Length: 137
Image (spheres, rainbow, N blue to C red):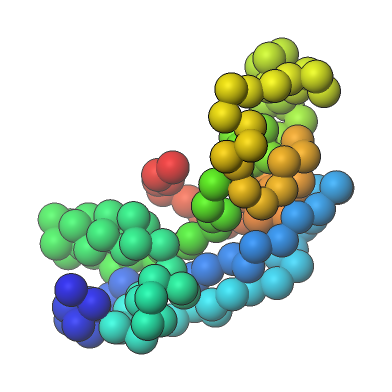
């Protein structure tokens, strides 16, 4: 439950705001949630509006196992296609994703930005200067 989050003061949470960019950014354009101590408010925000539920449960389980302070970063935009999260180098390595004529059976089901690289540029590239020990997708 969300109330459990109050028992994990050694977990810190950070959420990047949903932004897109046609060029790689070195800093996040906006922050949804600055570094915060885990609590029922910082985790759920009433309706999981501040932090990813998947990321939170991963952090909670990891902390229970390791008993080591954790900093969790959520950078997500539900329903977006993979190609929007891929760097130009990754797109070059995956010709099917980088084709401007690429179509998908469920294209109409995607939400948010559809353009190649725009979420990588705005929400992932600025994080590449951080020391990161692991990631989940």
